[in-house]
Image (tube, rainbow, N blue to C red):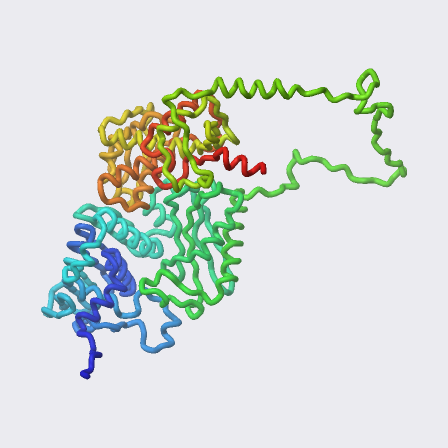
Length: 616
């Protein structure tokens, strides 16, 4: 039998490695920008075409490379950061494994123009699918210019499964922001399709955050600073009154590197306990500086997950630092014993030896609760049970359904399960008697049992159907605002809003572009005038971002659902009988009376058989 094990060609091996390192265009941007930072660049420009499909170009004024280094940089495991195994535990640079450039060159057409500082002539390299096609002298500026064209041209399956341009560019912006937030001493510029998206000059850390996410964030940030022998914690956390349900800005950085760390996130959330509503999220930008030998940044290909040697002590330090910051800002209530209006507590004095008098209790010793006023024993009144039965029969006869109305059929095993479909037409038998329980549920009697309706979920379904129909008919009603509201969008939000504008208009929004990432909100859909316009528009955008919608119909449904959730009546709102009746009538005429568009239960049934079982 012949041997079957063989070595893969370099081109195939590089493509396999590229699958781990280069997941999408944003991965290329991250790797090239980090290399520019390691090269000591003071100015970095990133130029994107078609969300990175056509072109990703990174221009820096760093140290540059010699012709030999330029050629070696595209070999696998070629790096200038590591010379011995011990160097892995003392890393203070970004890229170090030497796989990025080789992986990029394996799946794209790459051109590098670079010139070493202090030399008169640079080098130009052209590679295609890991193959060096050209290397020649070049009269370029000092630094490096990486141009990556036609990404995944030789891996059609990977290119096919890239998301829409809006989604891919949003990921590019996310990577760009993460690098920019931790390097305020470097100037960054980002272009997309010849349009300047971000221009971040050299600044302080707080100003860099404001330049990225808008000046409205300035008053919502609290400085955090804690020093210890184990870790240094600095940065900013959001004020408790600036929390949001979605789209919160939450960043951890360690030694200048972005990371995701759910355990440390719980420490921050613990500090906000009892200060913010459940489900709300605060903003935070937290920077950790720690001895590199106590962390491992090489446990994940993208290096966004980091292992800490002393996680629990750092957790405690982080929790204390955030709590202290919130306390200093008066976010955490404290007891002030120096207040002038404090309650005076008299000081006990033993002078005079005055005895303490017990409080007097007045009682009537002749009172007997089992005797009437005439002092005769209380006699239980005979209850007229026949009269009660007759009243029941009368009620039953008065509530008899017409012959056209069918009895709601439900098996005893159904209970609260929605596994079996029920014909909504049979809900015509619902009686006119309904009542509200704890301001959240509507309970209605049926001939065969009880229907329990979640009023918020029911209203979400009703409004969702209404907004979707408005978009389909392109005739959503709008209520103009007396004073337009201005909303400032982040680059990520700006990248998604253009694809939503048409559907927003059909639902009833009236938005006008003011330029520089600002929009004027001139009108809202009818029925949501009581909501904050800025928060409403931002929630709609964040919902679209989280769902990563692509098709027009999906975008429409995402907008409709987000708006319905925001506008629906909240749990705890007391409804009148007419409002409950109208809500039920609208629900049972909707497309689905049992589930909200995102799969939450609206209605559950409690049959007569189940009630009887509970009293056996």
